[in-house]
Image (cartoon, rainbow, N blue to C red; front, top):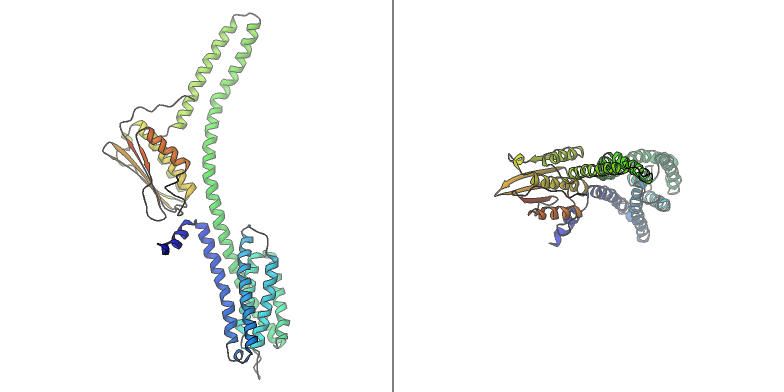
Length: 415
C-alpha cells in the first residue's frame, strides 16, 4: 500500500499543480548535467594529470553551482508566476559560481601544442547555457539580452586568464551566445505555459462564481420587479390614509382597504417568485446543465430514458435540484472533461446518477461532504429518498440520488 502513496498524492493534485511540477522538475534535471559535464572534463586525459586537491575543489565548485542552479530555477519560476520577489542575490551568486567553473574547465583542459582549441570547449559552452536558463525566466524580457551579453563579455577575460587565446575565447563566447538565445526562449516559453495553465484554472473558478452571482442577480431582479412598484404604492396610499384620517375623512378606510389588497397581491407574487426559485424543472435543469458544462469545455452525455416526462411534478422538481447542485460541483470542485447524467426508473424508484472525471484525490472526500451535498441529502430525505456517493474509478466522482415515485404534491412555504 505504501507504494501507492506517491501515485495517490499525484492524483490528489489539480492539473495546474501537476503541470507546474512537471515543468519545474524538467528544469531541475537540466542542472544535473552541469556537474556531470565538468566531472567528465576532470576525469579526461588532461584532467587526470591534475592533483587530487584541484580536482576535488573544482568538483565541489561545480556541485555548488548546480545547487544554485536549482535554487535560481525555483525562485525564478515563482517570481514569474507572481509569488515572490525577483531572486537577484541568488542570480548574482549563481553567476559568480558559473564563471569560476568556466575558468576551471578551461584551465584543466587548456590546449597543448599547436591545437588552439581547448578540449573542454563543449563543457564550457554548456556552463554558460545553464547559467542563462534561469536568468531568462526570472528577468524581464527587455533586460534578458543585455544581461546575457554582459555574461558573455565577462566570460572572455575569464577564458583568457585560463590560458585560452583571445580569438578563441571570443569565438567560444559567440557560440555560447547562440545556444543561450535558444535555451532562453525555450525556458521563457515553458514558464509562460505554466502561467497560462494557472490563469485558465482561475478563469474556471471565476466562471463558477459568475454563474452563482448571475442566479442571485436574477432572483434579486425578480424581487425588485415584484415588490418595487407595490411597496411604493403601499407607502403612498398609507400616507394618504394618514392624512385623510387626521382630517376625519371616511375615505381613509377605503385607502387602507386598498393597501391591504395590494399587500395580499404582493404576497402572492412573492410566493410565485420564490416557488420559481425553490422548485426546479428536471428538463429545464438538464438543458441548463448541458449548456453550462459545454460552455466550460466539459463534454456532457445525458440519458433520461423514455419515462422522464411521466415523472410526478414533485419528483421532477427534487431531481432537478440534484442536477443543479451536481453541475455546480462539477464546475467548482473538478477539472472535468466528461460528465454523464443518467436517469432510470425501477421498482417505484427513480435513480439519478451523475458521474464526472477530473477529480483531484481528496476533493471528493466521501466522509466529509460539502454544504451543497448535505442540503441535497436533507431535501431528498424529506421526500423519502436518499443520496449516495458510491466508489468510482480513480479520478472520478459518482453521485447517486434515489427518490420514490409516489410523492405528494410539492408545496412551497410562504416567505
